[in-house]
Image (cartoon, rainbow, N blue to C red; front, top):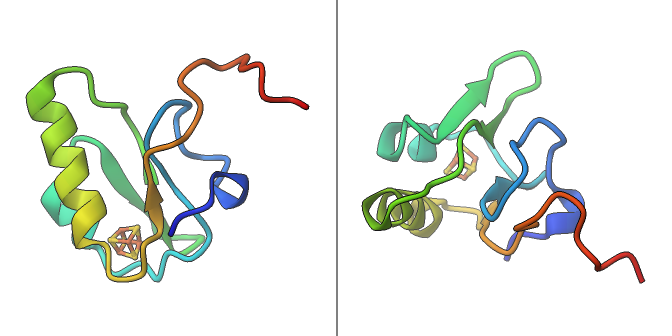
Length: 86
Ligand code: SF4
């Protein structure tokens, strides 16, 4: 299960993210290229855009489901300044 405390800082803020378990298999980038991209230098994927429509959410959910190491999470911040600083 992905851990939002281990997500890469290059993910755009929001619900979906990639964490440091990513093995750069490229599956999410193939599944949802509008939302996931590969950082070739650092060797991991990251979220470049958050989904907005139900269809876009489905694409991201499919990418999440297809990740072989569960490196994609969807419990990231929904607001940049969340109140979960406790
Ligand atoms: S599917 Fe998972 S392991 Fe593969 S590149 Fe995407 S986040 Fe990384």
